Image (cartoon, rainbow over all chains, first blue to last red; front, side, top):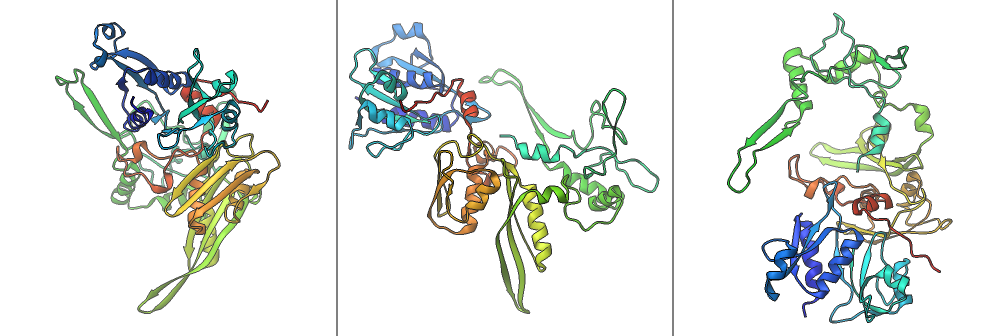
Amino acid sequence: MVLPHDLCSHVQNAFRARHARISVPHTVQNLAILSILFRAGFLSSVTRGTPDQPSPIEFHAAAENQKRIWADLKYRDDRPVLTGMSLISKPSKPMYMSASEIRRICSGRRAQNIKPLGMGEIAVVKTKDREHEWVEAREAVQLSLDGEVICRAR
Amino acid sequence: MASIARKVLYSSLRCGRAAPSTSQIVPATTFVRHSSSNVPQTSNEDGDLEIEGGFPNLMTPDPLMDLHDSEVFPATAKYPYESKVIVRNDPSMFKAYQNILKEKYGVTQEELDKQAIGKETTDPFWFLPIDAKYRQSMHQYTMISRRVTKQTGKGKIHRVGYFIVVGNGSGLVGYGQAKHDEPTVALERAVFQAYKSMDHVERFEGRTVWTEMEDKMGATRIILRPRPVGFGLRCSPTMHPIFRAAGIKDISAKVWGSRNPMAVMKLLFRMLYSGNAPLGMGDGIGGVGKKLEKGSGMRGKDDIQRERGRKLINVWRA
């Protein structure tokens, strides 16, 4: 299992290098985190594809290890929309929070030594819920879900 | 972010042509500075603004201001379209204009300005569109006034240095530094620089910063935190006047590392302004980015909503 850190650094570096789009391996984790970024407005589109190009049709014909997810990056006024994306839960110290603790970091107070989310900042939470497994921090608060707080993006 | 302060302050400046007269030298392109009270402005029957000498004709290209270098790159195999790169104002048209004045007419811009104004003046604010009454209504704080010394072979040369902060108490703030043998002259120049450098500060509810901010410049590190109504300015005495001048009323601020006043103030200004750093900190042309313009600065909720195309919703403490 590849750590979420891989995706965090890939996305952050691509934005800083002003790339138009990125391609990452097709895994549930990557798809979930990129969808949350897309819903939050950091990416313009998330598509399935092959290593050559984003194409949902050719995706089906590709082998398992040749499947990719493509994400189009967003820029405005010559500035990247996403300035930083970093891990919260690390292998050396996993971060599991209850719903009330997640609500604390969403409302500007720290919990478990994790800095609160600033204005416009999001956090990705992985829960044990079967229907809503990967959610954004504020969605977890609304659904009253506990989970592992994976990463933050601003 | 566009500098709203500069638009507000300079809105009454007119880049027009001086009234031609036989005693005056008028080059084809004239960068003439007027103070607001001296520009002859009238309104005609339709309510349109008229200016003495007329507005410049923008339909014909001006040899100085519209001059540019351009290069056309033909289509290649990899990129099948022709592309053109246009570079404007490099080298600066103002420097080119000064050279033309010197070589062709034998005058300097200062002499032309004095002709336009029509009187000799020692007021350093004569060509900024603000008067003494406006200046009295502003916050002005002398942050540093000190004697600086240069040791030469002939002895010590003493000068006075000032660091002034100026602000209108509701979103505009600037700082200026100057040194001179005479304190009065140094103070005037510093205040003038402060007014020139004024820029807009984004505030949440007009009273505090938007989000927790942390920044570092050299060995100085500052953390700013937004706070609720009535909290007050809980910060170091160096930062307090700057927040007062900017119109920030509630804040929690901490300086870590070096507390050198100059460094703290300059870093604070860099954090408060909305950011003027060029793309990738230069050099896409125009030079390398400046340390004091680094960062994206403070950006409000509107900016973030616009760039993401999403609304930011609050999670209330239910």
